[in-house]
Length: 263
Image (cartoon, rainbow, N blue to C red; front, side):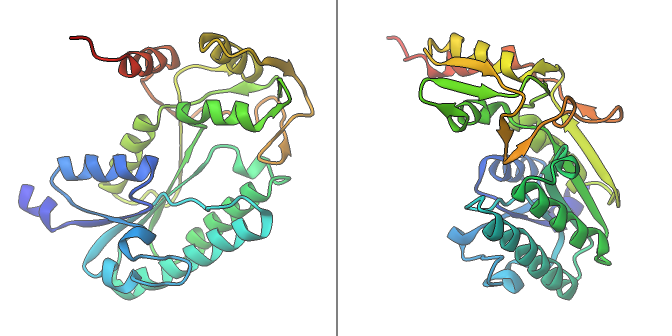
């Protein structure tokens, strides 16, 4: 079995990012031949540079890359051109499974240029003859502070009072890894955290825990990735795979890790 694993080459596009680096690490621990591909390693999905070389002998491609900008035209170009290039070179290399990471609720947030681009990416994957699996994840715990920062106007944070079910990046990576080494789903799997919060209350509590003086306003018109949210825009359906890590435990671990070592 170990020899079979060693023969299975899995290329992770975006393999040096938050999720990608974790997926690569997990696959290597399982003794698969996991290759991290990114512009830093000479692989550019927008231009096609390095794709033929890195995909040679690959059985599975995991795409967890993200656009460097969220401007509407640029993000659409990134996801459609990159995905089209990947699928083209994958077909030539004989890749048997295309795995992509996307967003829970993307199909409900068509006002958002980013979410429209993700849906266009998914359409290309589904229309390709290459067997596929798409993982829809909710927002990561790691990005909650960035969300608050992006929603800040002066000393006030405007957040919609809707349901929110974030997940740890480690748990998303584990789900992606499991999908990558399994048979293609030719379908979408939703992954979310174990607990549902009110979006505004979570941000308020998070800032308070860090002694952040900003106030949080429950604003129904506050936008998320450029879209106005409804009650269930950001939460998965009934069949979602729920992760184990709770936000309070993750935050406690982060606080512990940030404490200076004592002699």
